[in-house]
Length: 289
Image 1: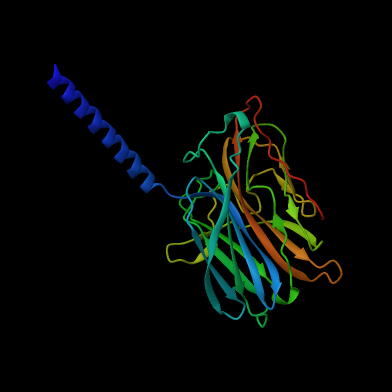
Image 2: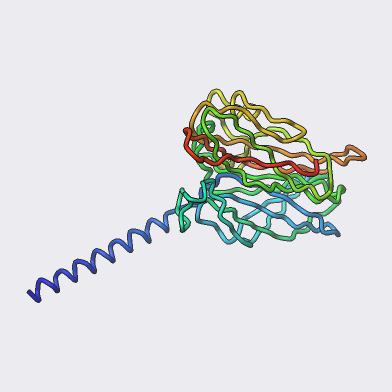
């Protein structure tokens, strides 16, 4: 009897260790999966800029993000952004939210920042950040790592407008969908909204537009939907269930001179689900436009 108890204890211990190692291996193999994000900036004076990256991904995040600043004359400056904070932004009803972050169920906003020097002798700087994996979408060809960009005009001494609402939302099938981009516009610039190409990094490290599946384009990521260039309101009636990716570019113009001061782009993913009771509806309100 004692021998049987001892054998049972050994089996339980072995089972526990095996399960622990299995979970540890799964976690070590897990990767960041991105549903979108954006880069913004703030001019601090003396050609110094505070650069901010908001990425929206699963429960995993790196402590640093590599950025490359490329000038209009071809100068390249690499630097790193440090992880500052994170917050839960899973697009589910509050009663459905998991109590702990769960891979491919939960999504978080990760905030990165750094202060960098970008000489004002250049006409323009383009900042590029590359993530690891983009969330699979119905309208995109698979396996296209997400890249984020923003453009700085040094002589504009600009504080870029900032996207406030997360770039992911859930909407009901066959019901009117309205998503208005919420912007913080501290300079009170005139804003113009357009669809643009989401970006990817190819196998050689080059940045280029993503490839769309047949029937979809950057100008029409959701067939039948429209984007109001002045209000930023995106609306239509979804007729196909799935995840859809697009990029919305916001260009800033000085109200007095009408000169372009810069632009920011948000990579966005929407999920269309079957009609469910109490399903959340993603919306935003434009301010200071």
